[in-house]
Amino acid sequence: MKLVLSRPVRASLLSLIALALAQCSPSPSPTPDVVTATDSGGAGDAGEGLDGGQTADAADTEVATQSDSGRNPLIVARPYRVRAPEGVDRTMPLPLVLLLHGYGASGALQDSYFGMSDQVTARRFLLAMPDGTMDAMSNRFWNASDACCNFGRSAVDDVAYLRAVIDDMGTRYAVDPARIFVVGHSNGGFMGLRLACEMSDRIAGVVSLAGAGFSVASRCTPARAVNILQVHGTADATVLYPGGLFGTARYPGAEQTVGDWAARNGCGMTRVSSGADLDLDTGLPGADTTRTAHEMCRPGGAAELWRINNGGHIPALPPTWSTQVIDWLYAHARS
Image 1 (cartoon, rainbow, N blue to C red):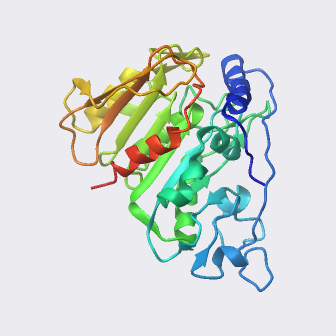
Image 2: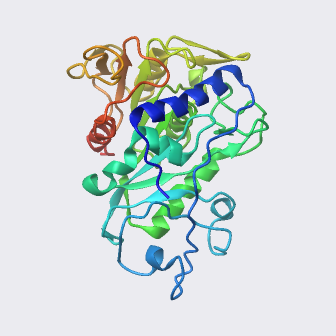
Image 3: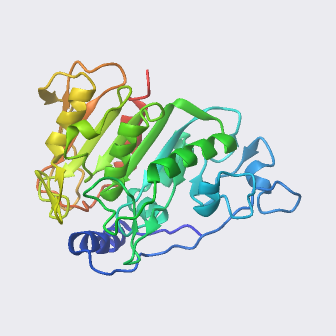
């Protein structure tokens, strides 16, 4: 079942996530309905539409289930949601977007906020929406950095899990290896930036809204350049624009995060305008977002900042947000 929510309702739901992250208080995660597919390919099986032919219609949810004995154990234990374009040809390579939710949310709820699945058919890409594991406060999280958001010090290896998701998508569809992207919000942005560090062999680009990198830049040593777009509100009271602490663990600010990636990508260290101002928060007057980027980066290594002036942790995103994200990612495929 697909969640269909108005933008104000989306913002209201996700404000609960920000509260849980800021206060680390017990708060149950909203849990959407899950429709599962067995993928066994037998006649009359729920998996028939998933693996049974060369084309398929877009489905609200396609997942691997615990009956999938041939799948990676990480996927069997942690199914993930998939959206594919209507009439997808499984032999035609398509971009893959990995959507990573914020702390306390889920892949489905994050999609309700970002609206990425609305673009799947029109823009012809594959969308994977995995979920983090639950912590002791029943909040889903990604083990992304010392600061965010493994507050219970779980041993879960989300880098290995998300690599398995990408690999599993490659068994279901033809994935274009030059266009594997990550889009994340808050804790999901932290996780996306970690994947850029540790999976630069696979990830072409990351869009992080209100995430951050490692506080110690040397913790991130990518093998090759990665395209990075950091989007952040200057009035974010949860993940502070200039950087801050969760408990005793520090995280860098938005400008340091982008600057660190500029250094890794061999860019010049001065940011210049990268386009006209945007309106990324409909609750603020006019074009609220300033776009700047580092120049002279190595091929495949952009470092760009979209600063939402006076924007908070959960901006009232416009209907064009998902289109703007996909436009940026498509312009930053691996060269």
